[in-house]
Length: 383
Image 1: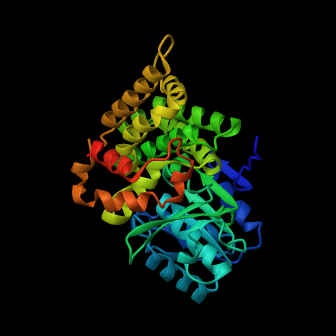
Image 2: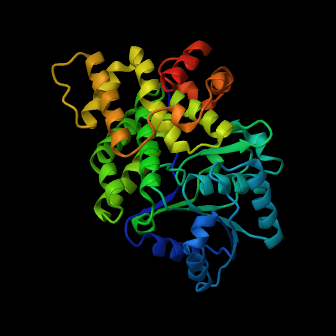
Image 3: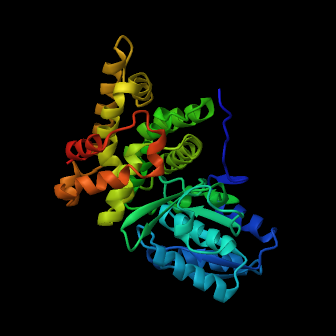
């Protein structure tokens, strides 16, 4: 058996009151000036201002960069880096979901290593640790607050670059469910299905190991029991708390077992059409797993059991079919669009999208390596 490496931030805070505890820990670290990387909605909701005030009460200055787009771009990274240098910030705080976290990782990585974020596409291309990054999460889905993954859209090519680098792992992650209760139902659904995708892809990954398996299966169980509740009632704090744990567990799984062709394909849709990442994953997930079942039926049957399906007495393929049907049911229940047509994706783009997906690092650990035509057919099936 090959050696397994497990990546995680050195400190992870989760649960009610985690944010206050995190600010206290930051104040003990000797940092003097933060760059808070976030987006306009979180500024308008007052979250960024409240964080600035909490830091100021502990004699830490904070400058806010709120120019992060839903699919963060190379231009976003350059603008944030310019502000960081101008204000002479000595650490970075990301506040939000996957988009602010990814943009902050890219800013912190280039701040330490120089060059352009495009230089770091691929696996472990950097030489130095990034500027220290504290990741404060406000959604239950991407787990970007704990991972070594950073996804940035190249504005010139419209391709989402996958930067997988141990040096972009934050030093501190924060998951306080109190920050998640105001998420709208549609965002709760999309991020929750993103977490499910992380867990399922990690479980069928060729790099899975007993640690990632345990994390993935528990995440799937928690999502099956709590996502619909959180979508139906955002103030259901038990469901919110369980989803915070679920997305963290899913992140622990895929951060170390990696992902598969759901993400490889979803990245292309997001970069090409500027679509929400979680929605793209949710639409593609059952179709990619149907393709994967030729090699991963036994594993998918185990996923079905974690989703609450009865699989005893079924063949492995029948169990896999139950898994796919359960995923489709949950997606419908939480309001995910039925297919790519509803997202205004164009069939004539499938060939190019497939070519780009086959270059994505996330596809390397998919249980079946598809041909170009296979990927095109999966896009068609999801249409």
